[in-house]
Image 1: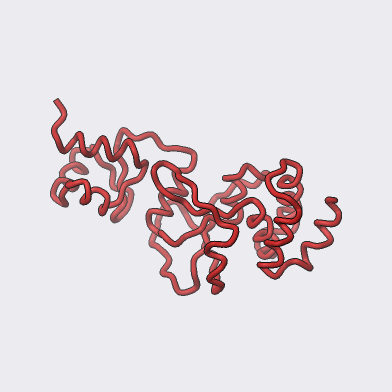
Image 2: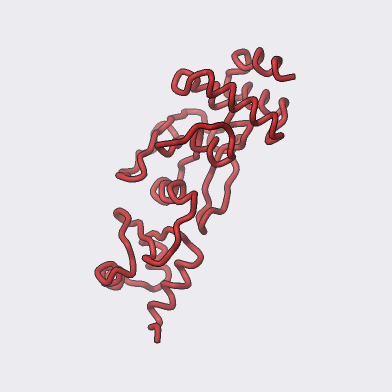
Length: 201
């Protein structure tokens, strides 16, 4: 028969794909119990302060959840945001995140991360939507913001990626031209994007 500890852990794991030490402690699972559960193989220590129940399934967004658990101020951007929205053909081999300029980069061995810095406070919230994934709130740029971001970072991605993202976003009606144009203005790439937007009309 499952113990009270196992019941608390199972209940927590059923609601959260990835667990932090703080969540386990809040559920009255002590440091000693955490250590014992890891030794027993019930809990898997992903990295310091991050755990997963051995029997918990991993979703397609597992990497995004893991990174968010380690970097609460991270916003999922660019190639990772495109993949989340099913835009384009790019496959992210890193989790692309945006962090405020002075925020410490988390020490994550896996998944690999690519960090984009911003000094503009508004870019932490404008064109950013929070999604509940595996019990974790993950901040991800909207399709319109993601397209504008691609043009802003076109030297990193290549203009072909930007144009593909713009075309698919409009064709799939994931954002309107006006929304994309407004995001381009916010990111100061309106003039760069203008001829490409006009070509899509």
